[in-house]
Length: 229
Image (spheres, rainbow, N blue to C red):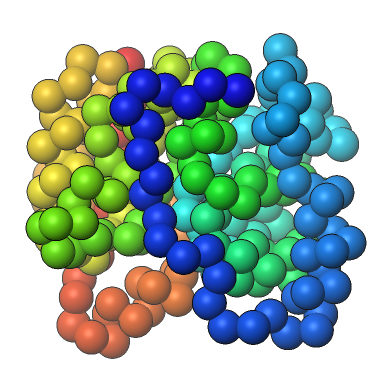
């Protein structure tokens, strides 16, 4: 697999606190069963990476503790879900969710999401979720933000026409940044028509721990939906 020109790493350390015994065990036993093999060429039909042929395939980048990803997979057993997370602790938490809920429709990538995007086949996704990504608030770190011309070009390639790219954040500067990048493009269209369209969460929304923390600290989230044209 070749990385796109200008590819840059967007994350720092990959592990935080020590894993619990069960988490460590699942990393050793369950992760090899659900991890995507990016060392091999992507299949022509992405649906083949799942045990059953899914009706839709959804990608969540930077799923954190996995609350939203797990709830989506549990509520939509006929869909396939792919989660990308750079941090081992997030992967371990998601493995617990998969084990507890007996989820057979989830596949994971531990590492840089840009590597996963480069691997995915063209027009293979029905939705992509970018929820509470690290805002990298210091100006000198802005180059690490996931939203960039490079990542959006890759997302446009792998999303089907008419599919949705969803972005949620409680960080006003990152929301402005995201709109600045997306509104200048011709392959995505912002679907908001009124202010309530970005103030209200999506139908079936599962609140993440990051959103709960933001609300406790008085930061109001916004929810942006873009259509792949």
